[in-house]
Length: 466
Image (tube, rainbow, N blue to C red):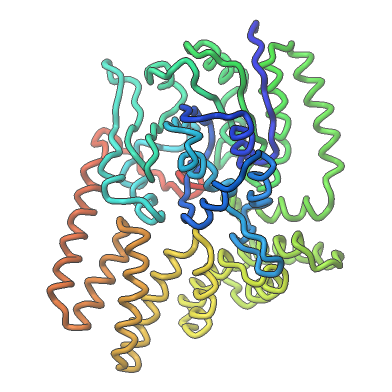
């Protein structure tokens, strides 16, 4: 290969935002190879703090050091503005990017629009108009297809790599790669050669001078054994020989051995939900036993407890998860993500009082707030039924309307508003929400590609969002 392109490697994907801002990138078209679409909603308040940043270092100071970190650390009053799940949303709002081309791995069935919209409609900020805009496009022969539309105000294209030559990308397009793109799930094998992706890119009519590459190992999304893919990619872009690539990989592999024991435990606890790995109670007990040797009750300990608590929720041990939550609260003052998982578990067990307490904590983070309002509305309906107190009906309406304002395309919220207004006797309002339901259904069905018959579950192997 004769190309020589600068390649900058980052540990976690969100660091790329600070890099772009430091380089003065404005209104860019970005082609992003990634297993997930990192455009989750960020509130105006958190974005305002980002807009005050003047340097890339200022931006990094507002980045979550880990995706399980709450938006606000109440124990230290630290307020964080973005992370790996939403940095591209921030890049759009800050004017860094104007168009995003998400290149998804081949194992993600992106054209199963029914399933895709089922996930998107639960995401804060996604509107009915967003869903209606997502259309399947293709080159004239019809052999290659992609999706084009608008999502959260972002001009978005979703495709697999074979579509790139047909997208008429501007020559100054930026290329960004998260190496979890290369890991096929659920097999956890390499799905495509890094060299093949580099070859695809250098044969596009782009003036490529730099690519950004992220490992995503510490967050659990890339298996540790594939960490060296970042160096292999960088070496290919820089035009090095295969011997150079192999030498880089050997040096990097030795550095993994210096990973601290606690970093390793946090990574391993996060791998299960990140990649959809199976786990049972005995495995969680084993992970927890390693934590006993760590004395400091610090930020890392709080993150590990939160990760283990989420695993306990997954296997249905709410009491064990609650103990992890209490430790996380000691560190952070609260943990909305774990709180939401606990609330769901408590509601399934009809422990409604406990669920309500957890949901009040879940109101504090952007990514859990809409769901917390929805479940608080459901609880209020349950309390109204059991007590006959009409005040709970009004409380349900308040929470459900808050959820509706944040997730206008989420059907269960609108269905619940129909129901609660009927309980209230306001049939005019109930009919108004029935009309909203019809709009959502039309937006969903109108975008299903009739040629797609693949019914695979999205689950972890097909989620658009991280």
